[in-house]
Image 1 (cartoon, helix red, strand yellow):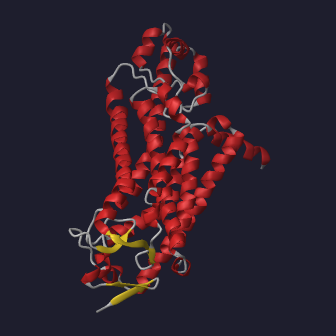
Image 2 (cartoon, rainbow, N blue to C red; image 1 turned 180 degrees about the vertical axis):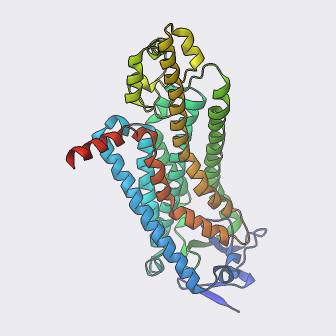
Image 3 (cartoon, rainbow, N blue to C red; image 1 turned 180 degrees about the horizontal axis):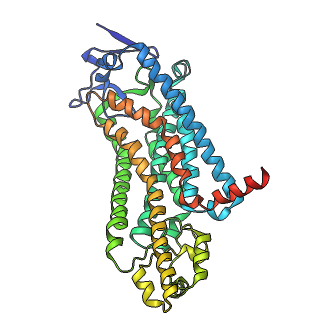
Length: 404
């Protein structure tokens, strides 16, 4: 009978270690999947040769280091923006990007440590439990921070409720961190009993699998599933509104997802009046679609509505061009911010699905580790094209030209 020994524990491939969920028999239980020790029966054949496994491990380490560096770059950039342009740093997507970068840094560090054989195999159970809790906490916090951006899109683009969005705005980070770290902490006692399986790069505990399944489902997986489903619904509805509804209506009022000043009747009148003047075109060119002052009241007015309010033919042409440009800019800005919850789905859905795949989730596990290792890199790319940074690039280029 073949055996596999990790951390001084004999993980036998015999059926005596395979979970019997109907009777609640104890077995080795993975803290990040709803499967049991039967995985070890097929791990050797799925991993292939030791050389191939070693190459994949090196690949993961390289991608995690890159993710760590780029996440640190994102965080430092947000801090610099806070000093250079505090008004931009206060915008939801910029602020949340900084917190996402922080969770990515901690998450990447933990994943990197999980690949260090000597470090992990020499840790005590409580050390492993804390690492497992931090890993889950950072993962859950990252999901919730992206969900907050989806909420912002929902309130501003879909529901046109900027006042409510403004009230919730500065509570996003606190709620995400408290809930993200708190839910995994509910199982903290259970997490304090793990051993480390370096072959599968996973934490394991010896417990009743059926009960653990329910606990982990209620405290971890269920909330991630709800959050990702909500993000998916928001993405579909926003895309529908942008590409279908906005083309069929005479006047479309919507708010920039990063700018949530309420639109009053007086300000709407001012916007309509100023849209007919040439000077407004210069103001809008300066503001772009991130807006300042009245520019934050991102109302997309159709050319038909504006033309009815303008008497001069030249002004009509300019106002038509202006409002079309504003609609296009608003559409582009919304699509860029929509990338945040979209990235969440791309990275996290394969992992969540792999949780429910049995008895052979190894290919999905490979995909999961690969996607998680590039999480910080992808977030960095999305951050670079954030529409709220559009004003900073000309400023940076101007300073570079002056200095160099």
